[in-house]
Image (tube, rainbow over all chains, first blue to last red; front, side, top):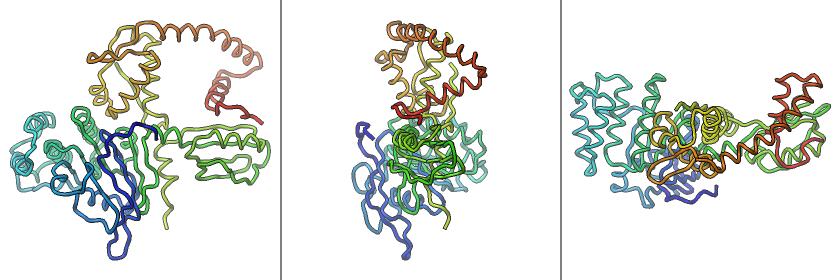
Length: 297
Length: 131
């Protein structure tokens, strides 16, 4: 909230995108400061892929503004973005070495030093054909290609999808290692909430084409909480006036409140109502996600 | 140095890391003048965000638990505030001991006493909690 405002690497405002009259994005606002690792969460069909396509310059918004590095998304901006798709978009008939040379030719700022380092670190078989590689090795090759182009913004679409837990951890470790050593901003979509919890410092949850939760994970962990209020008898049917009440459940003597604005105001209201016990429990990112996104239609 | 973080616990990760550094100092695993792992290697080893490690170190330095020496890294602080914290804790300990004795005398189990303390600490700070 009150952190010093770093340069914004990604910024969208009121972003809208319709495909044949169907609105994929309905006024998406995103702000991604330099140096952060931002997890991008949402159900299937929430608008994640559309957002990523727009940031990569592969789709154009119907209305609204999307900027990367403070300017329009043009060819020179695209040179500064590395992207790894879920499918890893590689040419199967090429050898690993061919694939690296082929990609390097498109990027004047190609980092030969990093190329050497990652070929060794990932133990890539240079003479093997890409189509013969395991899924994990393909992912590592795709990471190398994204890391070495000299990008300042890395966008990953489901980077660990389909990988076993050990390989997924290797991939996360490679991303963290790269970010720790190079000035880098990362935006990655994922269905793996645990991995967002682990490596992200910011999170954006998108639902029906809008950003519904956004901020640093530390802030979210401090603001979101569940408050269990116990009464001496049947819990009264009350509506809490305190700000931030997202959901209230009443069961017998207990009222459970899910809040996104801390617990103090709600606890004070509960006491005034005669509660005998008020317990505040931290919530996980998974709970925040599940409580925030809309129910199935 | 081995730290263990549980990203899914709901507790901010920088707080978990801070607690573990403090715990390591209490147990003597880390001692005055010892160097803490660098931000980059630690974040890479633990697969956690370098900004989070940096934040934990900044807060620990602010509390006087560690010292950030420019260009050299993070070290367990020599004395001043860490000792004062220890003194403060030592001075408060009889209070806790007295309370625990009284609760035991009322027949409460250790587990019940622990729960009472935890509930009290987790409760909102400002008054008017109990009806």
